[in-house]
Length: 83
Figure 1 (cartoon, one colour):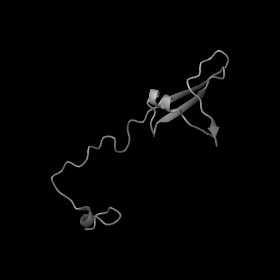
Figure 2 (tube, rainbow, N blue to C red):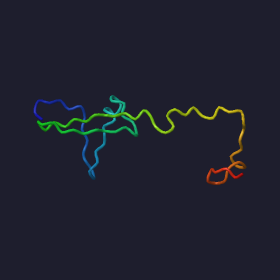
Figure 3 (cartoon, rainbow, N blue to C red):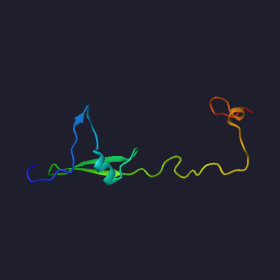
Figure 4 (cartoon, rainbow, N blue to C red):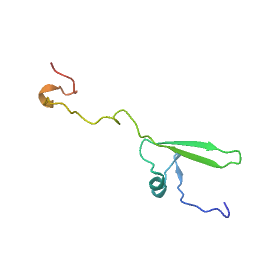
């Protein structure tokens, strides 16, 4: 690594490595994002961040109806209708 600059470093522990906070902030890495690892022919390791910006509730804006509900009487302990 002679002559190379180091942005940050972390140690491997139990086959896991932490991403330094500075790098997480700069690359906007958040929970649920995926890291794709690739080893180049020259031995260089490339890591690409695939940001998760969609999910099951990503488009959900909440209930916009007129009907009021009372969770304690309308649902049982498991959140299922008690009709």
